[in-house]
Image 1 (cartoon, protein in one colour):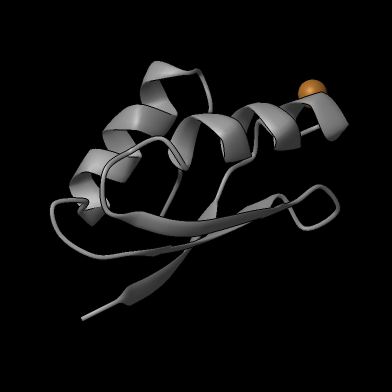
Image 2: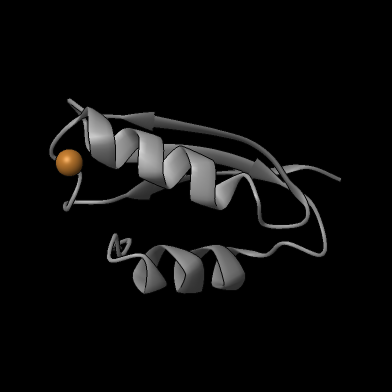
Amino acid sequence: MTTKVIYSIPNIHCGHCIHTIQSEVIDLPGVKSVKADQTMRIATIEFEPPASEEKIKELLASINYPAVG
Ligand SMILES: [Cu+2]
């Protein structure tokens, strides 16, 4: 069962941020797709176990792109 969550990430400010987020999150086991948007400062992430909302949020925080909300 794939879950799709949209994360609001205020720290996104340029294309480098997009690249960093996408390349780091896709390496998390269970993550199927990552699409970050520079203008809206969001990341749409599709995942299934063993990935979880909590693990993704922890990873985002660890690379200095904490998700809010
Ligand atoms: Cu940036």
